[in-house]
Image (cartoon, rainbow, N blue to C red; front, side, top):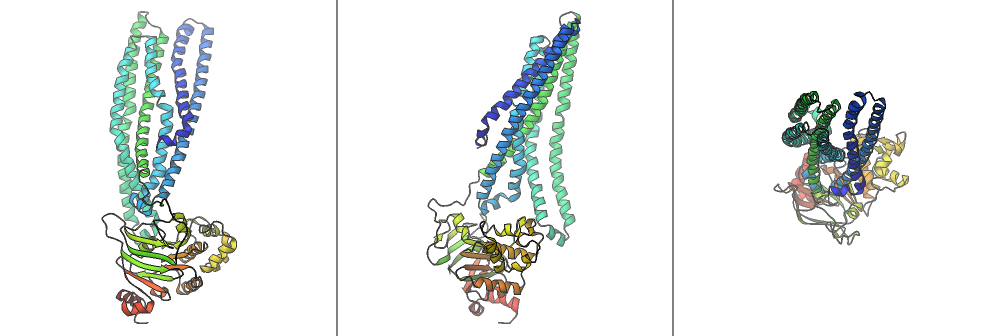
Amino acid sequence: MFFSFLKDFRKESILAPLFKLLEAVFELCVPLAVASLIDNGIAKGDMHHILMMALLMVALGVIGLLSSVTAQYFAAKAATGFAVKMKSALYRHITELSESDRDRIGNPTLITRLTSDSNLVQNGINMFLRLFMRSPFVVFGAAIMAFTVDSSLALIFAVVIPILGLVVFLIMRRTVPMYKNVQSALDKLLGRVRENLSGIRVLRAFGKEESEKKAFSSELSALMGVQLSSGRISALLNPLTYAIINLAVAVLINAGRDKFSLGLIEVGAIVALVNYMSQILTELIKLANLIITISRAVASWKRIESVFSVSPSMIDAENAYDEEEGDEAVSFRSVSLTYREGGEPSLKGADFTIKKGERIGVIGGTGSGKTTLVSLIPRFYDASEGSVSVLGHSTLRWKRSALRSRIGYVQQKALLFKGSIKDNILWGKPDATDEEVVEALKMAEAYDFVSEKKDGILSMVEEGGKNLSGGQRQRLSIARALVRKPEILILDDSTSALDYATESRLRHNLSKLGNMTVITVSQRAGSLMSMDRIIVMDRGEIVDIGKHQELLDRCDVYKEIYSSQFGGEE
């Protein structure tokens, strides 16, 4: 999978390291030019030779710079292209996962994979293409070039390079696992930040700011502790390598002095050897940083790959249907649902049928399974046991896009997106005209407050609808579902913020849609009294189904809910 994202950038992936090798070749030639300038130019007072060597070094530097810039361009293009393809594929994969899959992985984890982990992989590819061939080539190339200058002094290189390699290996061996812990700690921190930001009002309402600050500081300290631990060990790399190189340079100069006094070597050759030693130091540090970056990138890729490895648990059947059949809108046959393996069923043995055009109410106490019941209709979840049929076909046999295009779903929490009111309504039907948008707003009892705004349906909505009241957000959400004129409309406790008068007018508007099946989830008995039938739920089970008066006469659960809201009145 990894290489599939790079297949369109094969040329860049090859040219980037090749141009880096070309830069390295010119860089390795510079010390020889310096040695010739000193020994054959300065020492002999030959200005022509000095000028020629100076021009040669300028040319080597310019060509090396051009090679470096070209390599960086190709490496950046390949890494960025890889990241674009990978993030696009990852995002598509996440959107294909079912609600159960996303619940299992967790939203903070998915966000981290799309952002932090993806960026680390991109940086790793960029660094790899630039340095994976250059750094080893320069290290060994400098050692070989040193032997061409003076074979006896070059033996110092043969001793120093393995020692430096051992130091780098030991430090990397210790720090690489730590970077995995850093990413795990970052996951936890992001999860807390997301939770606190989404629930900031609850925190303030219960005065939990200080305790959450302490919890955040604790997790931040844990992250900082892991980063400091890895940083302290990584920080040893530079001083240790510099100490070894400087010691080697001192030995090299001392040995070179002895040979120079015997007339066995020129000053320029000693300078060239020192330059090669410095090149080795620089490249080993680069190589160490490359190893760190690659290690973090590999760890991040494995985390991204773990998301790709999650196969969507919900897929369309090979011969899926896209047209309705029969008079039944919804049918449940002994349906049970368990959200997590080993947990208690949230819905048990649901068995009922809803005819087209019926108005159905669903009522029950908190946690009774109302939302679980209606979430099976648009196939947000698949039943653990039994079967759910919508418009004549099992939900497992429907094309999900076709099924959901026939259903208008308004969830408990009214969620609006940044943009105009019209933009939000068009989510329900992208090609809706302004007249259809206005009609939907009127049907949802939202047109009055929209028309009072200066820009009308073009008035802007902030992210999450923060510039609107709870009731306004709910009515716009209902309008968004109504604009598509769905065959089945599900209102999942989506009128809880409306006053009774507005809710009554909304119910009256919906009652005029005779061909639309309306399923209303509510905890208000008064909101459901006029329904054709009411489904009463308790602890994940359907305890009774009937009209309002019938349930008052025979259903204790419904009678208790009604009495708690209306006292003894009937």
